[in-house]
Image (cartoon, rainbow, N blue to C red; front, side):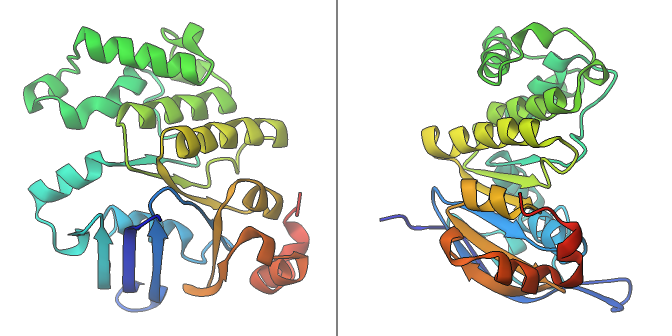
Length: 257
C-alpha cells in the first residue's frame, strides 16, 4: 500500500500586498508513486502550487510535508537537501541556451557536487557517463555537444527531462511541460515522464490543460479554479461536462484532445 510522499494542509498564497489570492486553503495528499495531474485555467494557481512545494515561492500560510519533513519550516541548509530530491521541468524548458546540451544535463548534479566544483561546472567522469546515458534514454545522445538553442522544442524538453533524471529525484514536478509542443511531441514527452513514474518509481505532479492527456497519463486528477480545489479524483471520474465546469466558457478554446 502506498504511503503519502506529500501532505499539504491549508496552503494559502497571497500576492501583491494582499490583493491577489493565488491559493486559498488548499489541502490534499500525494501518494508515493502517484502520477498526479493538475488541471485548471492559466491563473488558477497550478504554477504557484508547484513552486510552493519546493519553496521557489514562499507560502503565506499552511504546511507542506515532504516525506515526513516540514518543508515550510526547513532551514536554508535543509531546503537544499530537500530540493535535491525534487526535480522540476518547465514550460519554456529553462535551459542555458548558449551552453551545450551535455552541460545543461549535468547541471542536474549541481546539488551533489562541492560548491567549488559547481562554481566552475567541474564534474566527474561518472557524472558525465550518467549524463550521456540519460540523453540516450530520452533518445537524443547525438545532440550532446550542440548548443541547447539549436534543438527543436521537443528536443529541448527532452534535455529538461534528462537533467531531471540526473537528480535521481523522488518527486518530479512538471509545470505545463507540453503546452508549447504539438500533439505528437506532447505524447512523446509525456511518455518519458510516465516511464520515470512507472519504471523508476518517481512520483510525478504535472500541470496540464488537455483532458485526454490527463486521462491517459494521470493516476489521480486535482483541478483548481481561482486558487481552490474544485475536483479531486480518478481520471475515469472526470468527463467533458465536469471539464466544462472547471474551465467555464474558456473550455471552448481548450481542446479536449
